[in-house]
Amino acid sequence: MPTTSILFTAISGIIVFLALSYCVLLPVALRQIGSHLLRRTTPKRTAILESLGAGADGRVIGFFHPYCNAGGGGERVLWAAIEAVQKKYPHVMSVVYTGDEAAPSDILYRAETRFSIPLDHSRITFVYLTTRQYVDATTWPHFTLAGQSLGSLFLAYDAFQQLVPDIFIDTMGYAFSVALAKSLFAIPTGAYVHYPTISTDMLSSLPGASLRTRIKRAYWKLFATAYSRCGAYVDEVMVNSNWTAAHVRSLWKRNVAVVFPPCAVTPLLQLSLKGREKVLLCIAQFRPEKDHAMLIAAFARFWNGTEKHKDAKLVLVGSVRHEEDATRVQDLRNQARQLGVSERVEFVTDAPWPDVQKWLGKAWVGANAMWNEHFGIGVVEYQAAGLIGVVHNSGGPKIDIVIPGTGFHAKDEKEFAEGFEKALGLGEDEVMEMRKAAKESAKRFDETTFEKGWLVAFDALMKLERNSH
Image 1 (cartoon, rainbow, N blue to C red):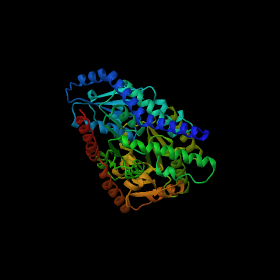
Image 2: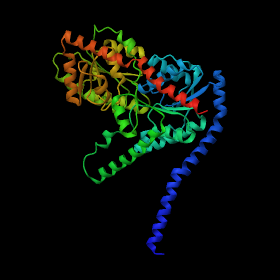
Image 3: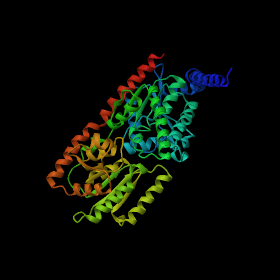
Image 4: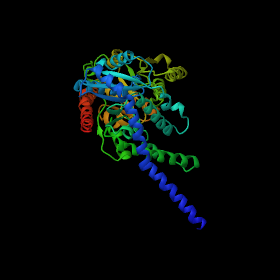
């Protein structure tokens, strides 16, 4: 037999074997592993439901949220979702898979005080994960997207070794964990997507033709292909904005439900529009993508150039998750000092919700500088409180929230500085009209609207689970 024929036969055999392994052997192996994990964790599931006093109707719902104690908008969605489930399904135990080390009572206390969401502690339990470092960006200095996604598989497996739920819901954006749950156990799965792991914007944002650029573009496209396949493993997909919906539909090639996050608009709508101070307020976690540095630079530019508003003040309110965030806050303090505005910039970290409300009740402007913010719960809170929004000209704040007549859009330091001047320079009648329009606009995003949208998807998951028996 000619050498070329032997080589062709060998290569063909390898391809057939790999295809067979991927299509047949791998699914069978995963299902066997799933059966083992299910048998191993069934006693724990039984004990949990017995503690709840649930009979045959009892179900364990797994919420995959490794940073459940972070105190941001994503966590508001988690706890509001659990509250909605508790209201309608008394025999359901909500299990939160978390990498946080705080005690359950501390986590729930923070959730209730930060978000004013009442929770039944007896129907929430926590599964503590010890492998959260694998989804931390610092663990993967290169090929971060792929590394974190691979890490989410380790983290999910850590979760399933301890408890296999009846329904698995990812509320933090780890799509590969959902694919693993479906492959191992064939259980109903859901996902609330705050933003896609990779977006079509990213794929089109690499200009140039250098070797490094071509390699990075190829890597992103390969990763996008893998991420796109995750959509087939999710039974119910919810997204937080029309911006996110467009990207997820493009990548996952499927219908999704837009369920705006729950925003605490009801108490904020009661705040008076009078007696406002010249406070420029930013409510956002101290994460790099929130771009507090640009806001400080824009404020310094505005303050140095304004003549009428030297009494203006920038207030940055946000949660600090860990030492890295604390270091970032100190860096921002140093920046304000270097720009000569440290006396006009105030930092408020880990404030309870009543304190946040006080700031919303006295501020004039609400600022948000994040590029392509997927939604922007803080921006809705600005509007409900009657603040004039000066927000980034992209993402959810542009498309869904700050509609014409309710605020201003900006894309860089110069435009934000100009936006601050415009917002503070509005005439009395004009500013009152814009504040009222903002309040009216915010009513679209209240907690009741979220609860209804969430339960439509959750009811479908419960029906799937019951029909599977």
